[in-house]
Each structure stands twice: as C-alpha cells, then as structure tokens.
Length: 203
Image (cartoon, rainbow, N blue to C red; front, side, top):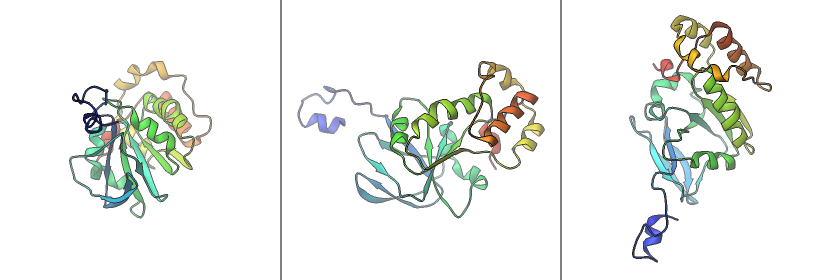
C-alpha cells in the first residue's frame, strides 16, 4: 500500500515499507487514452521527460496500443528522436524496463495481453535480456518481437563498433530458436563482431 494509506492508520508513514519509486515510467508520441485505477485518463507527450505511475495504481491499455519496452530510460525521455522507426498509423506506449529502483515493470508485463516490441541494444546482451528476461514475462501477450530496422546491418557495418562485442562474450552461446529475424541479427553480430547501441538510431 502507499504511504498516504499507511499514515491513515499509523503515526509513522514508514511503519510499512513502500518503495516510492517502484512503478512504471512511460512516454507517448501523441495523446493517448488509458485507464488508471479504472478511470479513463489521457496521457500527453512531454519532450524530455516520462510519466511515472506508482505500483499501487492499476494501469490498463486498450487492445490497439503497442507497448515498446526500452532498455535505456533516456530513450523514453526523448522518444521523438526515434519516431522514424515506428509506424505512424499505430498507437505506441514506451515503457522503461530499467531495473533502477524498480522491478514492477516485469510484474506488469506478466498481466499485459497486447502486442509488445522490445527496443534494446543491438548486441548479444540486448538479445539475452529480450529472450531470457522479457519473453518469459509475456505469457499473456498476443504478440511480441525484437525491433530490427530494415537497414540495421548497413548501419552497423558503417559504425563498425567492435569494443562492446568483446565485453559481451559471456553471451556468445545465445540463440533464438523461434524468431528467425532475431537469430539472423545474432549470427551477424557473432560473424562480424560488431554491435550498436539503440541511441545510435536517433534522428
């Protein structure tokens, strides 16, 4: 329960532990109608920030809203730099999946029944997070995928960023058995030993 609810019964609001920053950090391209505590409300885009929803509040989305899980919170704060990667005719809600001070996003994903897109780094660690941390949580999701832009291989070869590959060798045995496109990316990374951070796709 939240600290204000605790204070109604106890003189000390810290009598029961309640993590203040355990919740969801989200952002949107355009105004989006959602349900918070069973009440319809609008979320508005504000460049350079994200909306925080505490874990004691229920948060529901319509079926046509696609959740984009993002590894780096700063990408969520500046999602318009990545708008060119997404279909302009669809509705998206960006969700930070950083573990900094919170793990509630994983619990929320377990109840999510819509479509999920993972927007992470294009390296073996990013693939590992998606395959072994995110997918196991998406048991109710109707669809999920790893975001792979059409020109990703051209971009990666042009950047030729090899340093990060050496730091991720503990993931060298990772494979994607059910997603051909992701396995193609994994094979490409292993073959050329180059990686790309998601921030490098900003415009």
